[in-house]
Image 1 (spheres, one colour):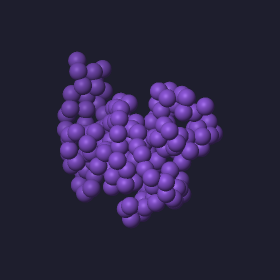
Image 2 (cartoon, rainbow, N blue to C red):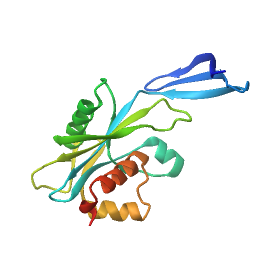
Image 3 (cartoon, rainbow, N blue to C red):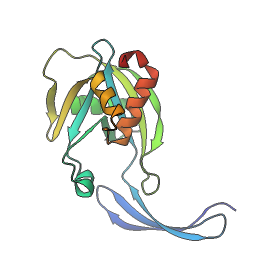
Image 4 (cartoon, rainbow, N blue to C red):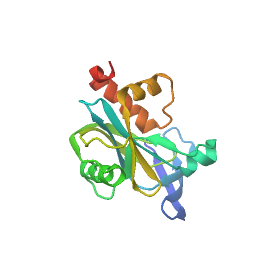
Length: 184
């Protein structure tokens, strides 16, 4: 016997949609689950292999603030997909959030962000970038600050457990595995 969907009711709709579903599991148990849906996403960790830097963004995240008092998160560039092509969408997001032009976009994988409640599935990328010398922090969107950091700082944050965003943690570890010489 497969999982059977018994019902799926709309509970709330705004930027995100919340539904309540009832399901019969293969062993016969019936469960009720909340399901949050705001679309699929993409994320990228841009890196410069020559200068040994990465670009991340710092911004306010209401859920992190409410649950832990965290006023800003430092994370890989990310955005909700407005079109099916995740690579072109994340390249657009990198231009909007950090003013970057990406090159050599490499897909790391696709992952459910929080499969216990959310339908969000993120396509994760690494990409190279180049930019002229300039300030280490800049802003292209209100409330979003782009930061260029040495990969050595990223490595220290990884080793100390200071990366609090799961997509950023996965991408930083993927970069470390795929390009270990950058971390020497």
